[in-house]
Length: 506
Image 1 (cartoon, helix red, strand yellow):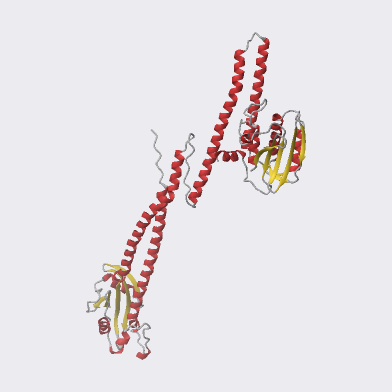
Image 2 (cartoon, one colour):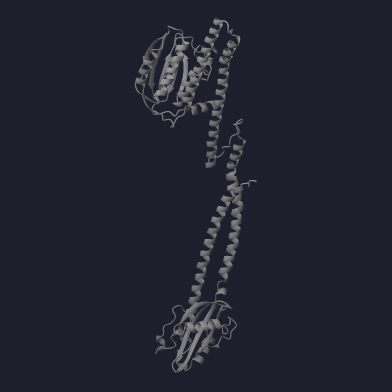
């Protein structure tokens, strides 16, 4: 029992997941940075407030000789030395009691005075909160100020997270150690920031939900051409190559649809050409096979003359079949080859064709014009096409009539022509004589397969050119190969079969 392959995650889901992941990371980073910045700002404000309110307590151990020399707080906050005349106190008890009573804590603040490790005084107001029973805070403050320096810090207790400052207090003539502790409830101070972040989280979730909904429809719309492309590809069969994609718009998907349609056109043209070729070959092979079979069936083996006649007819038909196969092979090579494009000297090409056609019997060959210049093309293929035109003229022109060849070159390109003085080509037949197995008069000529002009047409279109047939003055036909000028560049490599397929599909 084979296990079914798990269906992959659709591209629409993957794209939407990537968008949501990026958006989520971005919102999380922005929210985290905002929270940290706001929290740090609140912490700095709390530290500033704590330091400002108890700044004067740090000078109690050695008060200045002149109270006017004591530095004032630079932020306008009231200090202990500005309220009390330290010289009036001889013990730290009354001084700490007055300090605790005078520095009224704010809503989220608390204070306590500690003497020899015992909490002695706390504010009598209800504006703050009581920290006199918070042993964790008091013990930590005592431990940290054992060296006599003021300390600040944060501690997590049962009362919440507290930001505190601990100021040691000593006084001459009093051996006891005093400690003033002031703390701020950071949870309460950060409550606006926390509420803002909670609002931000809710808004971020709403934004992600909106991105998800909008992204689902947008990605579906963007990917619909690809879905249509898949459906079209599934609908295409070897029997029906006609389905095409919609090409509305100017985006990348539309360009891809046009490219796929162009590819489908070429494939359909190639399949049509192959079908036509098979139909034509099947039709052409029926006649010689029928002829050979008929003569063999009617032949009298005992009659030497009848056997010799049947043998002669069979060999002739087999020779014609061999020429047909050879021409089909030439046509396939002309349509499938990649042409080697280089500069071709027209004068030298014309002279070479003149030398080769001179040996074709029963006609007087003349070179009437030599073009001076170059054309872009494959010299061997151009020579093959030109000689094929000459051979076609020799076959379909009465023996003894002259045939002229020539070449010309102008701004529109080069022309290679062959002019005969035979029966000519009817105008109605000139558009179809370059098709496979088509003949101008619909009759079979001995030695012809009907593929010669198709080979010429394939080679010419492989060079980006065209073939034409015109009347020869005085009677006959002039076959012309028109090639583009040398400056016109063709896509490399050029395949004659592709050009022929495009023409067929058009």
